Image 1 (tube, rainbow, N blue to C red):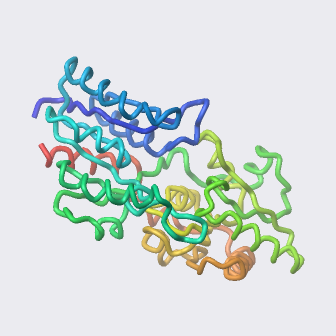
Image 2 (cartoon, rainbow, N blue to C red):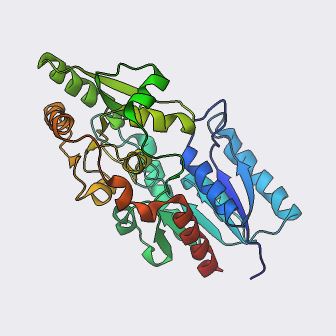
Image 3 (cartoon, rainbow, N blue to C red):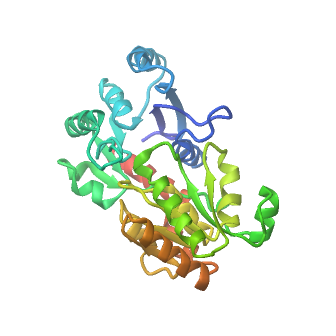
Length: 326
């Protein structure tokens, strides 16, 4: 095929200075594929501002297709994937994120109404796209059309996420040098993420006399997250369901110990790494594991075990996937 390959990405929302925590992994993937020479265009739906924008984006896509020829049109998330599929000028690819493919959950673990809709739309969409990107083998098992799919977790920027002296990171953030910090990196508003589980675990440890605090990192620019990870003693992830949580891989790149529930590909990513544990979604279990790790492990060797997830390597795999589709 002619070089450079031309790819149009359709995204629900793009991370920017006003909203730095809006799916930063999507922007990171697009930036990485651009670095290897792909001619990239972006159709930002801005679905967070209005649902009407999804319908407007169908018209915008038609206009873009009149102005430029694309080799691949890649939609991130099921709704963007449907917009990509509503054209016949170029092969359509969809990246399922997890919450769309599995459906969003209520706090009690049952599906929301939107969750049922998303699952139904995801199942049908499989037959209208040429390629499917999923984040974990668990997700791939649930596909009807497995042959057109690739398991491709989001890559990690090893230049950004890396180990640094803990005291240095704490001074940067104005944190106590003597305290033990458990990091929760995500939205505390999304009940299925389990923020309350970690809060209760920390309360248990405080009652036992441990000098420990829960540290929240949310709504921040990506450049700030490595400081929070390096300032912390343990990362806690108490989610009900995940696809391939980026925060786990980023913590691994920083050699930060992890206590997490058995969701998505977490077990696969952290398996065999000292200082990383899988526990049940229970405050007592989390408290016990956190206490053990804080007492015995300072850093892990996680970075060495996820070298294959460097963002450059993931970008090359995605590029080869595009080539195979063409």
